[in-house]
Length: 568
Image (tube, rainbow, N blue to C red; front, side, top):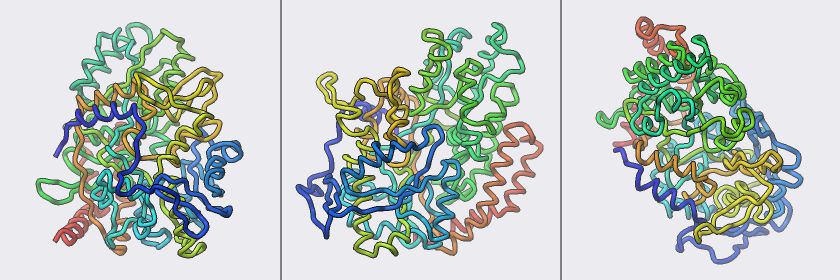
């Protein structure tokens, strides 16, 4: 059942002004708890009496690459100063992070702590990662959050056939949509379009027509030619890794199908039909055909640059910042950088930027439905090397680092008094960066001479903070972002989360064997349809046949058998 977001988002924006007050009293730990040489507890700083080293994987993003200062004076040094835990970092380029940790797990050389994992399924069968659900009794911060926000139904969606889960997920009090699109409002206005009115009930089809009108105006003004594209997006090419990335994810969700980034781990776009109470492949559905027809219309009619699906993110951004394009994707972390880049290249007062509640398709659903996000796996190597007692100590540390409010604030904002402090706004205490600092990761801009705390020291990076209460996860939201979420509440809805079929190891292995080539096939055909290399009408049957030849029907059949057995 769909739920209107208005009440939820109103509470979200109001709560974002506050600092979360912590777990419920039942789970509260009043003082330190000693356990064989270390201290732990709910909202108690983990501290080892003796120095200890834990290995940890790191997804190194090129746009804020890890610097030596992060370890000597930044986030990793801060963690060590507080906990007496030295983190031995194995850094992988974010572009092949999943492949590298997969190789390490399979070879038995994985780090103890493996963060930023979105899908643990490929790693479960081989026995290289621990069933972390066996150890949550040693995690007071995790357990308190689960109890306070009633997270058990959400955790059930990641349990395997054995009833256990193998990833400690980031947990949100409420689901938050991050990615959306933004436009050059000044050019839309000049072309005769009020974007703020349009977004109230617009669809991808109506956006197509609006962009045709905007391009016609731009051509008439000599701003571009008929051969130029006015939309060339990011997070779809190199970042999309052949899937179509973010754009096809949010557009697909608007048509009740799985595509883009969402395709990973979906066994070929498998979705649940609540009316029939069975699973089906959305990738060969009529909804999918409708979705790719709409996506193709943007390319076919000279609006969306087909290079979108091959180019780097920097190229896409530069086209927008220089004024060659007038629409692109964005998210909370990128908004301040988008503003600063436009101001630097085009000049203050020479543009108006507006972040929209993106269009709907056959539904008004946001792409994000789950309260869970990427999370942390612990390797079997850690248990083998440390033994049970040492492993439990590691679990205690992980509980503090990923689930305590103290560590969340440290990883996100840095140390209080060094990079940020509290300030009063309308009688309420909120976090604010100190003068001389800015942070792209928090969506907080500043002057060119200001120090970006993410680039300099590694705070607000994507590896080590996610989830938490609405108050904490929104404590960096600017008024513009709060306004966006208020509009989400007015114009969009949240779909219910699909149930999960929980295969055995043998069943999962079979599904993976079928799904990997099938998903590659779906992604390849989808991009060919959208870019016009294949004709949606005349080649559709051939596409469906290719999916059937790659076992899409067998995946659906086995998935339904698994689900039927577990729901008896």
